[in-house]
Image 1 (cartoon, rainbow, N blue to C red):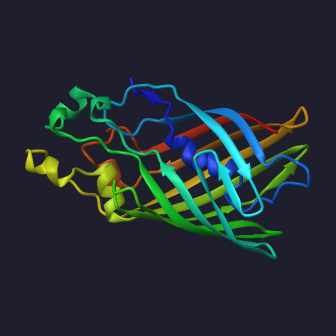
Image 2 (tube, rainbow, N blue to C red):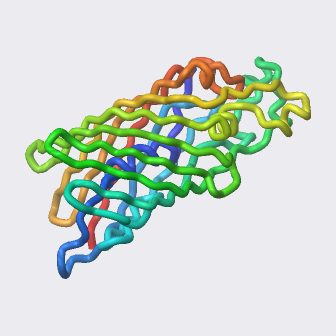
Length: 264
């Protein structure tokens, strides 16, 4: 039976969109810039034999005139003028897996001894993003690089969303595409040189392009409360699907996020 995992990586993509990956206005005079809440993220499994998990995602936000924080990422507004924003960003990359979370049998079927593998650690991404907001929607371009020393790779992405008012709710369908550098893709979906030296098969997918479609929802209620939700689907390229570390049935990744937060 194909298993499902509830993990943080789903929130990494959805949370930034739901809380406003493009610039939000600063707080109104006298209003608190802080918000606090809780969310749950889910996605279909990627890695071979991944066991089902449940993880809550704390939703801590801060929106100042220049500095901002949104869940697991934040930054500084370098420029905000005439529908264009330019931000310096910093965020946690929750990708990867502990080696004990792989399925022993699933790896053995591919000739891999789980004990010879290493953990794929989370990273810390430093980057820059620019967003253009107009009557035809919002276009965001972003570039971020791992500065933690985990993958030492980078990701470049482009996203187009069209916010639509539906009653008091904001619904934003979007399309996006991400380019993973070879170091980033090799670290999370290939085998490491140290593992190959121990006898693990040598597989390195190289750079990869991952397209995504989805829809986001923001629904205010009861004054200062906000319900956020999102659904997206990312299509995995063949070079990632063919990795011996990836679930043999994984063709794409469906991600869901639901959260509730309150402004203070």
